[in-house]
Length: 243
Image 1 (cartoon, rainbow, N blue to C red):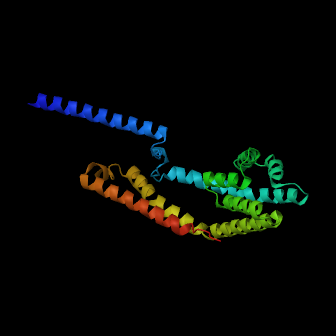
Image 2 (image 1 turned 120 degrees about the horizontal axis):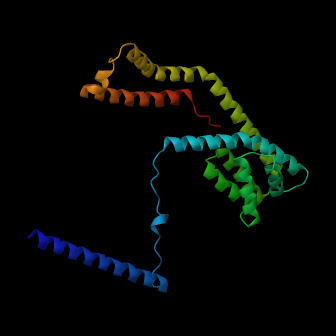
Image 3 (image 1 turned 90 degrees about the vertical axis):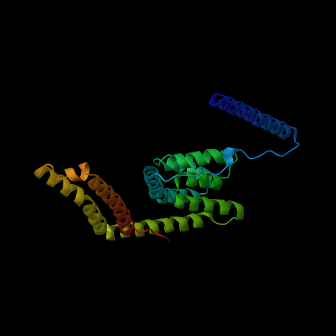
């Protein structure tokens, strides 16, 4: 009975696969012939992106590096614009004196603009890649000036001033919250340090936390609470700067 059931299931599976393959082939032929419109591919569907702390930290570090380099670079670009150069040639000249990652961003944007892509669009794409809000503002300013005209020197000067003020405000806030951040690190590091010291002085003191089932559950709960406390203290000690 089981053998017959398995054979019937296998035969049904093969028939279903053959039917689906024929349907997909027929649909593809009708799409190529223009009878029915092309369907969107699965690759174009939105994908769920899970949070990765290491990736988020790397992205924040890259965005901070771009923002710290952007204000001096804008000052050099404004100097080239004042003597009559266009923004593309100014960025090309300035990129030689910059460091990574802003140098690669400017060089790539200039190369794309030479191939026909608007410079503002190229910078906007780079701002999405590096998650840099300041670079997105610069891209929007260049794009608006290209479409509607106006003095690009005045626009970039206002953007540079805004970036400088925001960076100064963020440095001031980090200075004012330095004590809180240090206290948060000490509070988070104190329990494991005390446990290690006590276990060294009194061997076997922490054995119930690992050997007993109740101790293991308490240890897991303690780790979860420590993680929640770390996130909470970190959020309190690093306020977000919005201008």
